[in-house]
Length: 363
Ligand SMILES: [Mn+2]
Image (cartoon, rainbow, N blue to C red; front, top):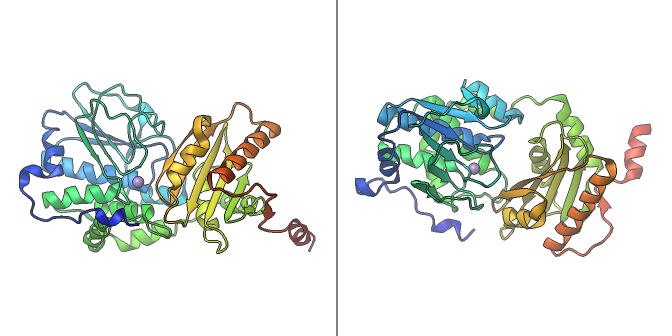
């Protein structure tokens, strides 16, 4: 947590020329249009960042903008966000690129394997807060602040610097983006995240925020939670759960957010099979956890992973989805997780005893 406190708060009146938002805007002077891209399965921080920057470009430069969607948005809250704010997200595969348009990547970095943007057009700007380093060569504008809890906070600081009016819709998207990336305990937050929240909250639509936070959940969510509980094993302070059929890749995160609340652990992992991939989601309550680096190390060359201090995610492509192939991969991952967290290899203990599960079924 000490690293976080080094982040400066927003300075209201810095000399105009040194401000990041001025540099960002001046580099767009010759662009015919600005298109925003983010990582796959855009989360609220990605969506809010695109929305906030599009408002900045629209207000300050009067240029047309496009917000894109890479892959699906499936988590109930995230779908509710897009619906409640009536956002028009263009699927990235259907985008036709113009030669003189500018591409701005938010909440991720080029060539980290976390997006399908293929670089048909050069990237003008990368604005992010992830630890995972991408290939930034040739990108004229880079603003990456690893000490920040969310990219939306960085975007909010641009809007504050330019002193432009922020519509309810934009403020609501930014608040929800910051809120989700700061969720969980300990908070992954810096003073800039909190000052952005304090500035934006009065401008946001609180009823819409409540509707998004309490989005209705599909039937498969409960099946998924049941599968995860039935397959949860404890290894000292680590809990590992497997979901054989993950109906939506973002459900691994929803499940692990629930599991990490268990008082007897400080690491939780949920892994599940979605189509021909194994999706991994990790949470820790340890301030020295460095979950992103831990998972990247564990996944290694098997796939891709990344994240933050307390939250991380990854994907491993499956050559085969046969039961034995998946069991082999599970065993390998379990071995690597125990090694990375220096937990002795022992037989795991079920979170819910088998006998209890059977008893419940027959009751
Ligand atoms: Mn983020």
